[in-house]
Length: 127
Image (tube, rainbow, N blue to C red):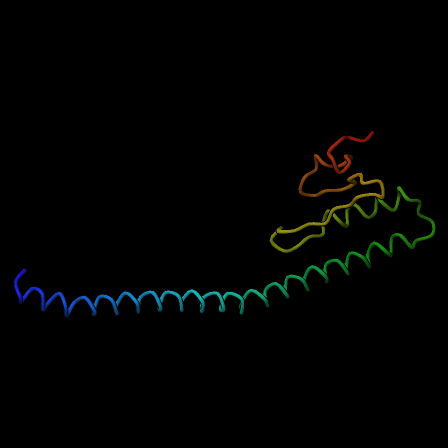
């Protein structure tokens, strides 16, 4: 190998080595920074979603308590009044809903999957 070529290779090798190291360090730092930024935005969004869920739940709880605390209603009549409340309730953009089970695990209302209504948790129909 001619002397001139060796000199050029000796000059280029450290340059390529430093460039590669800088590229690896930069990509690692970008990954760390993007992860931190994602956490910065994710936490407030999750908190807002939790608060929204809590607010919807509290609203429905109040409405259901009004129906349940009516002394002249029997259980079936109360359920008939509660079902429309739950069907109409949900999150904006239809990305969530409320469902209703009784104490025996039978699904009484499921707005997204109506085929589950009247079945227990394992999917067996209850007469």
